[in-house]
Length: 251
Image (cartoon, rainbow, N blue to C red):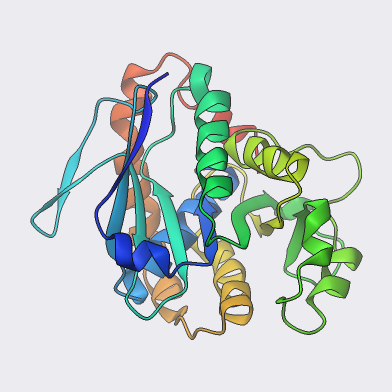
């Protein structure tokens, strides 16, 4: 599989110590969250990924081509946000996810990775709005907010539940390489995009990154966001025989 990252803003990328990614998982929580970060913080595209695993679709946004896989940053921000507007083809998801993980590991500035996803809201058994799935190295990372390590330990993903897809592959790969990483899994609806479920993920990102991202827009435009995501995914659903089965399989 071809995989190459084109760096457009090297100076901005060089200042990024944190990698954030969100996939089209359960409730579209990851994708909605990273989209909201990019929009609210007025981030700019700093890199794109060329891959033979990319579906053959592009679009136009704000007079610029929007490609399937993009990375965003900002002049005064110390984190980079990866946004997949579409899923990699299912048969190359493992290889794509491993190559992206290798790029994270090869970037000496990155210290930690946060992956945002969803977990079925019907499984909620506590008042905490998130469940976590950490790599082993996370607990030795010294720059986490006070109390977050204990919060993670008491709100781990329920035993017996499985995480699948790119989020799982990347977490597993980074865990094997002793890199600090964690999945932030917000409770969500199973069968539709859930902007309201993404609010909890955005609030946790605010806490972890010491930023102030407003969530009122998510609440106010929940229905509009839901319909827009359905529209974006429609071309791929029409041409892919699997109809994004994997999107319903993993958190």
